[in-house]
Image 1 (tube, rainbow, N blue to C red):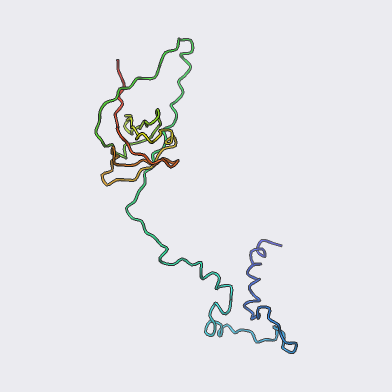
Image 2: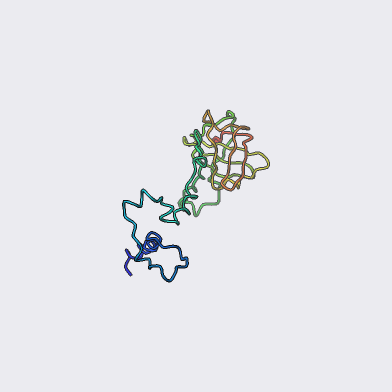
Length: 197
């Protein structure tokens, strides 16, 4: 069996219904066979019969067509996804023989406003129990505290937030939705500045 015949086989099964088969009803012994019955002329079919009379199986698909009431239009809605920040690059093994010392810089928290531009956020990383570390596009970092009921580890794979009218993420106003389903608000944000001492 070639590929074309496999595709056309289901269509060929519909031909007995189109040719005027009576659907398996008992026939009289004296009635002529179906081949002797007059065939439908092409000009008779559209004028005399609808599609439902010619092909009874077409009625089945009428209920599947969508109605206008099922269509919904959503306007002015945008969800922003903040992806997690990638791992820091590996430090070369140049300091193998030196005694252990902390190479990570220390950061101080500095007060900032209550809002932060959503477009400035480049990435996120959970830090501690209920703190998120937000990485900004300009290289700055912001520590964001979540309310007590939320855990920072729920945000390991980033978060979603709805776009506000002013385009800012504000404390006690906007909700962060983690990909695992947690829904949290920010209670405080602080800018992190490297300690130069």
